[in-house]
Length: 104
Image 1: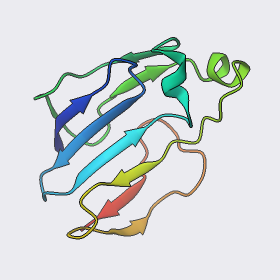
Image 2 (image 1 turned 90 degrees about the vertical axis):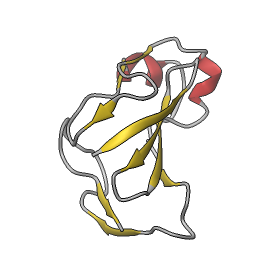
Image 3 (image 1 turned 135 degrees about the horizontal axis):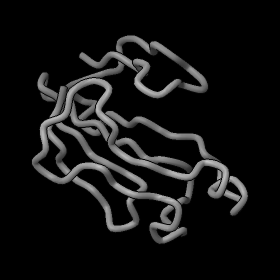
């Protein structure tokens, strides 16, 4: 559970501040900022409260891959001096709504 802390004009990333204080950046794809928002839409706004399973970003996976971009989606712990990923729940393709990691 978290509060949306940031979104980007290119709609490919969302920053969250989790209830435990961990700051997470979810970045869909590698170098996808170069698409300028094409194939992406952000489903949340800064200040929104979200819970596990809330859709954050909608994107057209096949169009992004067809444009030559890697769809690997990093989840970055931005304040990693204070918080660490303690469990990788799923390392690989993830079904919508499935847990990805635990941070503490």
